[in-house]
Length: 389
Ligand SMILES: *Cc1c(COP(=O)(O)O)cnc(C)c1O
Image (cartoon, rainbow, N blue to C red; front, side):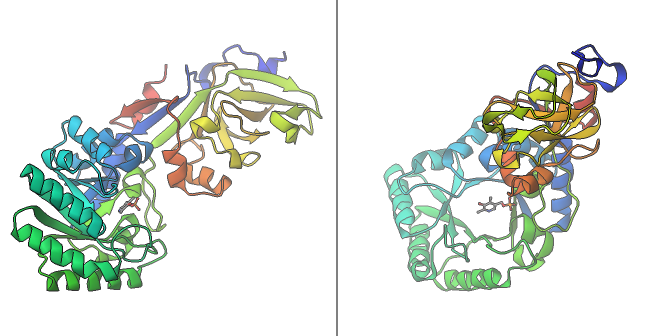
């Protein structure tokens, strides 16, 4: 082994760490939440589906509620229940459930549910009638996604039935909601106009829903006419701006220790299939993170990590559990910390960079970090650095 790859400690520039680790900066979530709350007079819903976009649903929810959000949003009832289990009492809306979901639990735990069609509405009303509980519902209109929500031809009947069910005391129609398909590159005027038509026919059918909501992150930032009574913001709270109009603070830092180092000769094949062959004598460092941990295989040969303050490229195929980094002549030792991504302050790549390298979006990068990676939540950004041993 040469001096360049000696595992001996290298003083001030080296930080060591014990294992792969995801540091979550709740101060960033707090700052992002405040930015969104200041952008609209409407109420703010923190969308914490998919474990808070990979940042911890309960932690993100608590932080957002303390900094301007007043609602929580999730897809499944199971996600809503875990928020209630954690003691959160804010209004929670769950918008993606099968027709035979456990509506009784939703009612008992005071979880609002979205109703995307007549079948769901009938099923919810039946559950209310058989338990004597009142279901809090949001009528969900398909404003252009062709994915979820009731189409126009079903809308009027659904609204009339909902109005009757409310009069009879089975449901409380809390909201009418839509979701914009094309809000990332400026206002989605078509989707917005569709929502206005759904609102008008709901009103004509006798629905008096106090909470009308349509906007997610992009429309909250770029289209005030879409705000209505409530904005549902997910990506933005964790630092992702699909509209590209503001500077939000990314909240994740993914790092791992070097677990193997070697110096190899020119012509050395690296990893499965030898998809990379070294062109010169160089140092290779192995990270204990692979595609099962969220390192996208598609980023092979393009992705970069930060090693002792320098960008180094990943080479060869990304394995399930390991990734190889070409560290050139850098003095790298076993246990040295490598930063895969972070907010970018130290020159490390961001989730947006990884998204570019893997031809995807930052959402997929941050929600894809596997369960083997240890999570640590911080309420002050400096604590992330200080807590390194
Ligand atoms: C995920 C989701 C949101 C949040 O979208 P962002 O762009 O992440 O803010 C809002 N509404 C619905 C229906 C969603 O599925």
